Structure formats: structure tokens, C-alpha cells
Image (cartoon, rainbow, N blue to C red; front, side, top):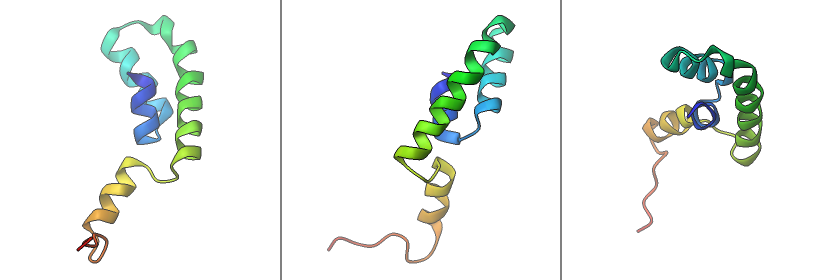
Length: 68
């Protein structure tokens, strides 16, 4: 869950801390932090824009073009 959240939001520390706080399993933190950072780096490499950037671009005038 933390890895997917980190990859989509590009916020690895927030993702790891959120999952640790929700589960109460603080022993997972040393494993989650590198995993979320790696997921964020891979996500940035595959798609330069985050999910928030995609939403912002869709709301801008002229961003959505018709295929017709």
C-alpha cells in the first residue's frame, strides 16, 4: 500500500509514515522507506508527471482535445 501511494503521489516519506501510523507496526519503517523511495524513482522514470500534475493539466483550458 505504501509503495503504490508513494509511486502515485511522489511523496515517499509521507506514504511510509501514513502506513506505519495506520498499522502501528513501527518495525516496518526501515523497510518501507527505501521501498517507497525506489518506487518514487521508478515512477518518475516511467512517467514524469505525478497524479496531481495530470489532474491540474486536465482542468486547464485547451488541455483536453477532442479526437473527432
